[in-house]
Image (cartoon, rainbow over all chains, first blue to last red; front, side, top):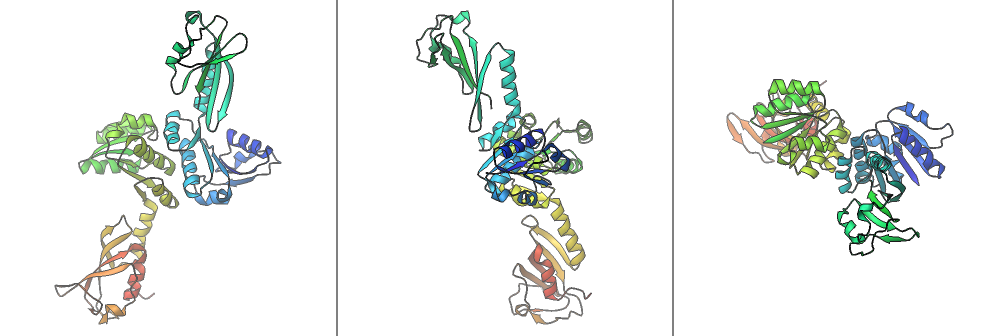
Length: 209
Length: 222
């Protein structure tokens, strides 16, 4: 794939290195040429110094022929503008922006822009660590990041039917299922009459981003 | 009208002042505390100190009740996002963005800004007409600066005195609307002559003004 990375900061440069390792052709834009020092000497990608929202700079970096574009400068608005230019003007098939502000990111996500929000991701990870839940892992489906945690079933709910505990589930987080001591999992369904045992573990799911 | 002004620098300040003078209700959003204080003190209006491209700030000034939002920060990205948020999230009907880099005018319009204003373009055009076409006086700007209704006078000793309009190869983007001669108003057709001393009213695209001037034979010899 031809990938254009806009912004060669800590994230951008790591992204470039990883993409190159996977065999993709990488171009990277940054207004500050010193940022390219983050890249290794044997980096085979193409670096362009220039203002990232300038169409001529984007063209020079090959936006017209690229398969994907990641806008990862340090500024949300710049990233959003680049994404939209890439999609509307240059018809790049796959475009993504790193957005720090979750609320702003949410609005633009509703308009079809794929976003990755480090704030949300970090909050979810830290919350998991601070509560006594153990993180089970993260699954990435398209642009969504889904987090699974587990915690032992608290004594207050022993004996209650699983279905009752789904009531608090909402569109972003909730109880996913019950992991039994024998290793089997029962999915949390509102109709479930399975009783919660003392040695069961609660599996929670959350859409982190 | 309730108008939200994003950006409290020089442009934002004078814009807000002008809006007030015209009887509108401006609300300013500006990030720098010192600028906010200045505006609040000098203009005595509500100023929200915050990032005009954030939902919090727009909620703070109740953008959903605004008739228009004008983004005049020094950064095109910020102006674009402010306008898009206002329109998409808060339903603001008219959005205006200052465009610092003329190259971005087209994309701003394409991405939903109702009125992108490029100060660089406007200034260049103003200078062009002042320097190049001194004999042409603009009366009215049409279609946001794309064309204008202008007045020009055919000087005494006009080299093309008596020429008929149809004989002149005037640019396609221009029309001579009226000719005033000795107090009489003529609405011309092709066979009308141009005489020295005539006062013309023309509608012309700004990009064709120079050509119009040349074709009429008004340009001074260098």
